Length: 331
Ligand code: GLY
Image (cartoon, rainbow, N blue to C red):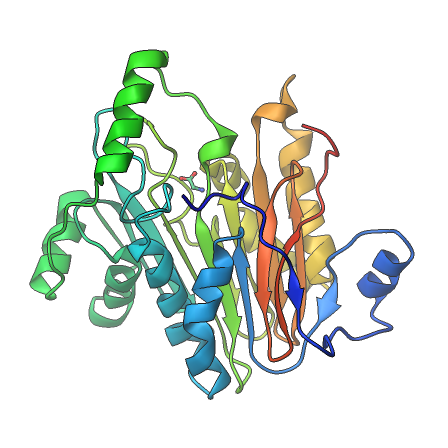
């Protein structure tokens, strides 16, 4: 089973293209905030360790000059088709009534966006979201309407509840209190940002959402501005974690707007995390949100509420998974 707990050894290829002299890099070298880096050429930046497999799928075409939009869709599709990933697509854990319900969105450098939420029985919600963006006058389709649209567009119906996920759900029903409880161990959206050779940005998110959630619950992942925002002239940002906290602060939009005002990708993510941290109640350990950001100039950053959030970065010279710095140092 692929989980964020699984350790993937960071593999920095020879000659890492991290520019020296950048303020955030200097801060990191001085023992300050880590994660502020600038990279040349095509870039893929994904959430969690499993983002490395998404990056690997998307990389060859992106490196060959392909579009950022195609790259983020390809990366998201890889996670959606992985039956061992319990938080995205096929094999995702169901809601408390046993339904696998999917949220996904996609956005490009021109501000075009598409999204689906509460979608059942379709393997690739990110591609349905792209069809919403490209073939309808709308941004978001939900539930049965999204499913009808997908089927009409030629997407096949699929049973996404695998035997393994069903067994985990049945075990949860036997042992857990029957109430929706935010569980930060079960919030692993695949969010992916890309910059292509021509400097175009794009992003995508895809998830089966909070496991054992109330039937009908929709998270941040399909909400443009919450889990994803792209402004081709400024940068892109994405989120993973407790969707309710991301939605309340419209975090990805906030990160991009802070970058527009001159913040680095790193310090913009830190401010978005601070907005959440400042509003937390007595037990911040119950909450995890992580942001990643990429500027139009190739600077990347990331920050999380709690330790444990990882990012996967792919450039021409780097293929790595590393820990993202966090607001709190213990959990
Ligand atoms: N971030 C995924 C969710 O809360 O559904």
